[in-house]
Image (cartoon, rainbow, N blue to C red):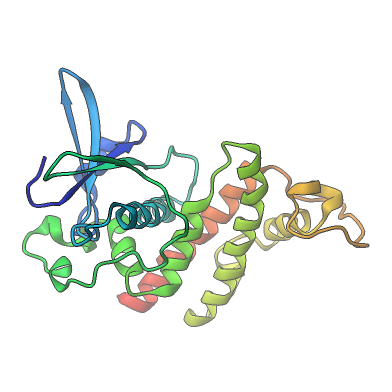
Length: 255
């Protein structure tokens, strides 16, 4: 356990995690793993929680950082199909006390303002070396990117309730990309097939198509002849759109 940090985070993730740990740069979140006689163990650290003493605040901040991390990974990949990184709990380096991850609310700016976090001494501390870590780094100061990463990180379809909520989250992302695209003088058609987007919105806006999953309640709108009704297809469409937008946005704003 690293004495540099106050808290160690226990992580669950897919088989991609060791490679990700080697390729996620910057000082915002440090990813690590061990493979010993116990087996493969995933863990993480963050300088954004090192200054905190209250475990409840640490837990809340980690919940938000987890969403942003997964959002950055999804924005880079253009997909939400991989198993997300999950922060299972955390423990104090000083006394070993362990705590679960939970949050009563999402902390929308879950960042320390300590200047040393952005100081770069080695190539591994430079988030620009890897696109996902660069997105997370930029999100600290860019509310547009932060909004999109949060929304992408929220997408989950493991349970029936999550599937109901996912349709509305996907629509929020579409609304946000339409709005933020104006900042780079682009239209939504630059990032997704307009016909596919029409099929997506047709489903979201009609209870006659999606039922309880729809974004709107009952109305007199006639049901569309065609609609995109598969949540996996809808997620792929919106994730791909967001990925293309983020690359264009970062190139326009930060190149």
